[in-house]
Length: 198
Image 1 (cartoon, rainbow, N blue to C red):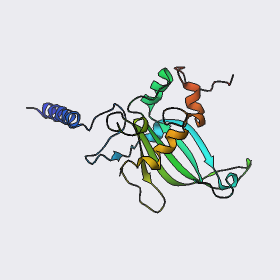
Image 2: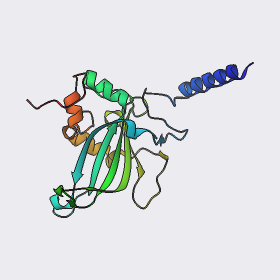
Image 3: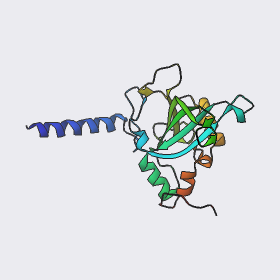
Image 4: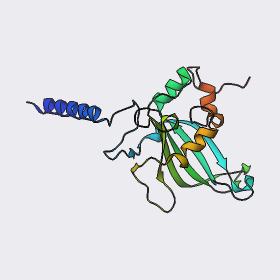
């Protein structure tokens, strides 16, 4: 048997084993290890950036629950599905970078809120089989917080830590689409790009 034939046979066996063992459930970018931990995707910055929010202390009586700038990415296939259907497909994954609120003055641009340092990295995954008992079939993960090392695999958080807030406050299927103009503009249009408000 040639090397190529052995390689194809080995890869076929690995794929079959993953499917049979239940590690390959929803079609999407999320990958899990044998402990059920989500693996940190290495290419998420090549995904679609759907929104950024700023929650500074100055707008929260000096004590914001989360003093940060959040930038959220969605995997390209799920974004394409959203554009077509207006729904988040089984297998959708988002990644959220958390950045400190840095300088308040920018040379030439005036006062504002400018990005500081990275202070967190989180993700969420929708998977009806793997998370059948979670609200909306979504699970939430943290890969990095200040004072702890960045991890390459993370356990899903207890429902009360993230999912409960999303369930109560997010506009669409556990996702805060009310804060993501990219998703609102593209919903069921099949197109990307700026659409003027009506």
